[in-house]
Length: 448
Image (cartoon, rainbow, N blue to C red; front, side, top):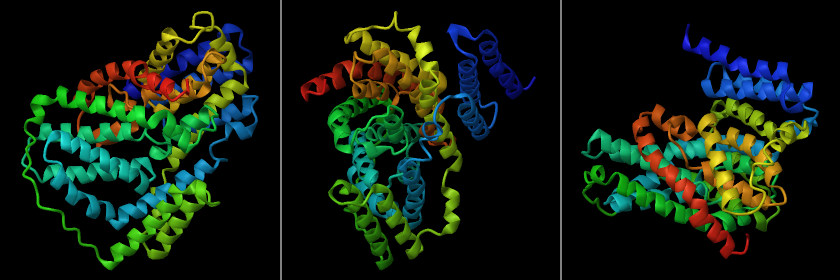
């Protein structure tokens, strides 16, 4: 029997049992919702069936049996974030077509990154700058990693070291994306939407920027220590002071980018919303010829359908009462007061579910509705939300635990051996960081 066929058959066993038994006192509709969710998650994880078709199936079941208003089930495509992401794909492709990132940043890498530590610092600075320059996180990840790969390929170093250095770029970008809400307009926005939180960019920075930079410092230090022997092979010859040459066409393209980004950065100071700002920048790129209608193919429609399905999970599980029944059974054994036990319960349960499901957005959509029920009145919503976030946003053991790592391994930037080797270190850092970094900071600034 082929592996795919076996996975497909196994995926149906538990959902069928749920429909027959209707456990925990679930109604027929709730059993259909739960069994469909289990089937969908199983098919997503083992890739036994096309993810887009499975996502459409789940949405159809939720709309039919979920007893939840369609506006909540289809919250994502009805929101401004949906259009923001679509336009960000096009805007980011315009930046790729302009080749500005490569022209502006690559010359400085060889000038500044003369030691492993300076390479890490250069990566951090570039990642922070590019958050403003390229809003779409996948495009940004690919562009930055390609810039560094070209630099590494120009050096006389071993392939194993090149893979370790390339992995460090991905590792740093994942963490830097957590410093601001706009760092990852897909996952960060998903977190806020699933939790139904109205947190703003400034509030996110108050909660996350400083402790995440400390988290980043600890992680970089651990990386330099873990790969100390291998990194001794990184001894580049310092290049001369960068001399960037830009044509008039480059300057016009840069002007479009700068105007758009300034408007976006000052969004709260003028009446123009983020969607309209990115629309303006995209139209300017279209007029300039940086993008054309054929670039619509770069919009990840399959990803948008998948996100629509994942965003619907929390709303439907809650709206149908299924989440209340399931997590109500855990209430007697889950810590019912704020303390170390509750914090560790949230962090460890989230990490465990993430290890099984893989997808960050899927994990969030499953975990947050349940934890909201279990921790309501015990811990503030934003604290619970961010504890879930820091439990998974940069934790991994295998590439499938992050879409970015899948991209990196698939493009031969590094292999799963390196991911697992440092993933074990990240597991320890992830478990300890809420207790030693984030909670002390939240108490210091009076949030907790």
